[in-house]
Image (cartoon, rainbow, N blue to C red; front, side):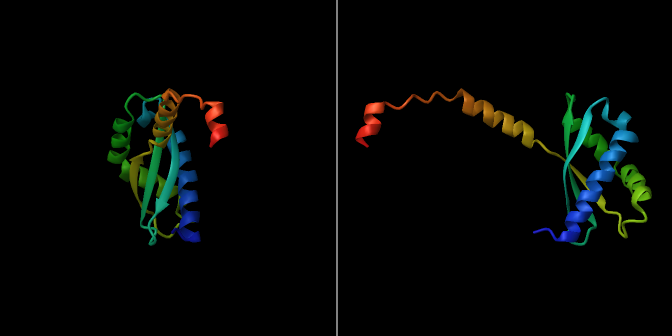
Length: 126
């Protein structure tokens, strides 16, 4: 269960990191559109788990790997941006958020099911 403070930090990280990604790190993403879908912080606010979603990307796993390789640079720019708001600048852990893809697959599976209509006479008997 996240505390109110953790939630506030998470929302601020999501907002500021999203701005940084759109302005300063566009070249890093090879034209892909990056969305930060969620941020979870540890109780001591030392680690932030950042979940990313990509549009217009053929290799999202490769992009997450690029971001992980540049995490110290990202953390530095983020720290400069929020230095007056945060006492501790968290270490970032980046993960690929594939919930949209999983939801799409589930939707396709449900649509492909062949469920026969119930016989009205059988329903009346039950």
